[in-house]
Length: 270
Ligand SMILES: C[S@@+](CC[C@H](N)C(=O)[O-])C[C@H]1O[C@@H](n2cnc3c(N)ncnc32)[C@H](O)[C@@H]1O
Image (cartoon, rainbow, N blue to C red; front, top):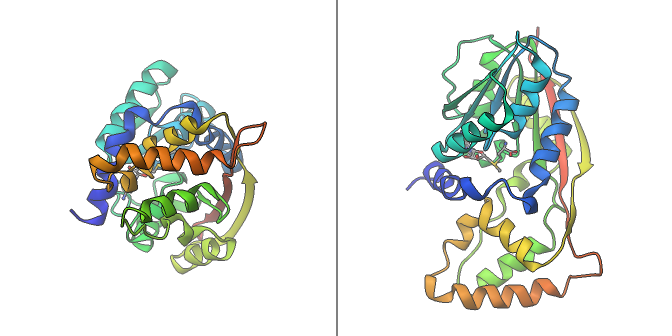
């Protein structure tokens, strides 16, 4: 299985669990991202790596009847979940597609705005992705993407990795560190043909009430891929060791989950 298939299979696995209160920073981020994007009625928006469609739906609400959102994801199960969410939202101006963000199938110079929340760092060839997005963006069109800062999910992630290492699983460097600094985000945008990059940050973290809520984060998002590496016979023991370590962080407010987020924007030259 190549890297892209491995990522897709993790998101296929978690799709029905993804929209849960422990991961409530995703919809909060979607609303903030749409504020920063300053989407106007009647525009055409592309939401890349849409997951269960949070950003796509927030964008669709700003567009009115004359505008349209196309939203893509490589995971078929995520797209199915997004379509189920859309039914409840009562919106009719979004089209969902299973598509690879590194090779978009849309025509050139078509979209006014491209959004991508917590998706770009999963792509094995981020430059290929950005070049493909630049092609489909209109001259003067805007890109906005989010990524996590180094403090995000710490020290929770460090403890998770340390506990996995006790079972001879060598955890990789988290993918999001590729876009964890303002300079890295600006540089990759300029290197791939965008102009006027800007980065702003916001803390979207909160206290998780108990260990089980952190466990839900592990089971329902990208961490699941690492957890799946644990042989079945070690999983109960792993959970109880990890519970013990994480509970040491608990205060009267709960367990703090830092979600420091970078919002990067840039434009396609006119
Ligand atoms: C952390 S989720 C974010 C989902 C959504 N944007 C949100 O903020 O709730 C990352 C998403 O990126 C998708 N993804 C990863 N690589 C992709 C690729 N090459 N093309 C399209 N989607 C991809 C995954 O399937 C997953 O749904």
